[in-house]
Image 1 (spheres, one colour):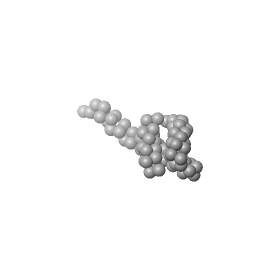
Image 2: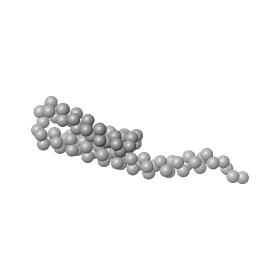
Image 3: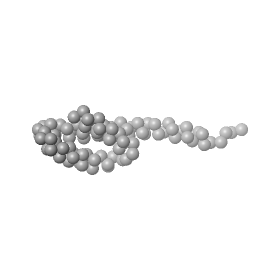
Image 4: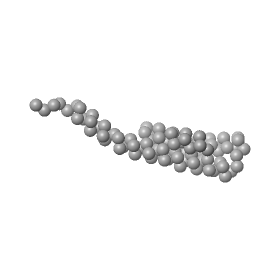
Length: 91
């Protein structure tokens, strides 16, 4: 369960930096199907399977939101420095 939590947070962070919101729905869908298949192969209980999928979906969204907020908070600061370096000095 901890591995699923860490991996889903990291995957969500990568998606938050790179893609827009629409990408979360297919990732949650295919990830849930994959986790369900793995849980059935490992003969897990239904409650543990649902809990794993819920942790995956929640932390994927959490990582996505944190990375997206960080991206939009840092980008304006770098944009201002970039434009100030491109301006010619006034004599």
